[in-house]
Image 1 (tube, one colour):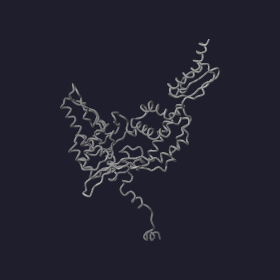
Image 2 (cartoon, helix red, strand yellow):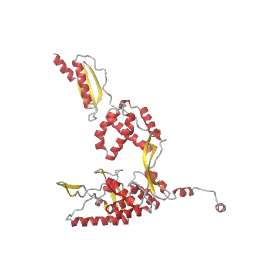
Image 3 (cartoon, helix red, strand yellow):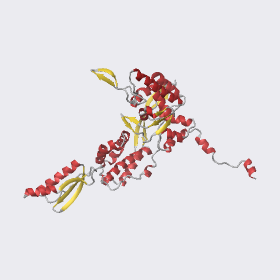
Image 4 (spheres, helix red, strand yellow):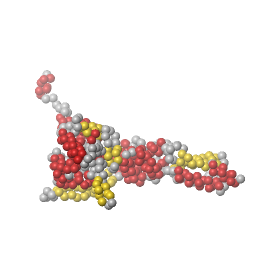
Length: 429
């Protein structure tokens, strides 16, 4: 009889998801006509709670346990979100951004709070802390001594979080809480519509250090002389403004030698082919100089491969030297046809090329800024620059490069109306 009673009780405690596929498990209890359920979290934790309840019932304890299972905190939910959704739902760069936001800012402040206790007031307090937050950054400052010799020194500066950084942090918190809402864990998302709370945060534009009109030829001649294998790559960066991953992802079919443009279709980074940063395909015009060098590169590569008895040309425009192939402890060649490793190019060749040219140290990304700044100084419109760079909005182009438009401010003020001249007054009479 006791065994039958235990079997009956065992059937009365079950573990399942309320929302199938949510990953959030509940314990459902049906004992002596009383039904109740409790949200636990993971399947493992729910099975443990079920085991404890069944043990109490077998001991003849009539009352259900008063203690509640641990509540699902933002930290708990983030860990599951990081393991399940992030790897398949977003690109690698976006995943890295989520991790920075949560590990550096969100979890230290909100991670221990149960999701159902995360109120709008607590999120507002968190936003206020972001506005007041400061971080340190180490910069390399290049100066000249009294003899004109360059010298570099490292300087640690303290800065606030920019408005754009706070916006990204909140957007990623909101995205995670939206998933929690879809999973039925919370009824409402407490982090929406917070923009007005950080309007006082500073707008900090990206620090750009483009090469000047006179520095570009110096840099390119150094590249041609010391690193000829990367000369066309550097020229393409300056004459198209393509991002480093877009350069690595460029293929020969993307180039239209007759119509004189190329199409940016993909991004190649960390060994993975992805869409472009804005998920948009764009067309970039080619200068005569770059078109000639790309054509020469293709012809040279065709001759090289034909001489080695190979008919097919690798599809990638800019190739990696390839990893060394070893046999019996000896190098026998290199793996061919793989896209260029831009991390290696930046750190081993680009910086050295700047030194050989006697130029200040800049980032590889500043070649993109060089392209934009030179176009603007040559009188091209910001709308054209936006299309060539592939910005998602003209606002981004204006925010970064608007101050470079030559004479824009004077043209604006000179269009303001002034007093009526004596000549105009006489003509009116």
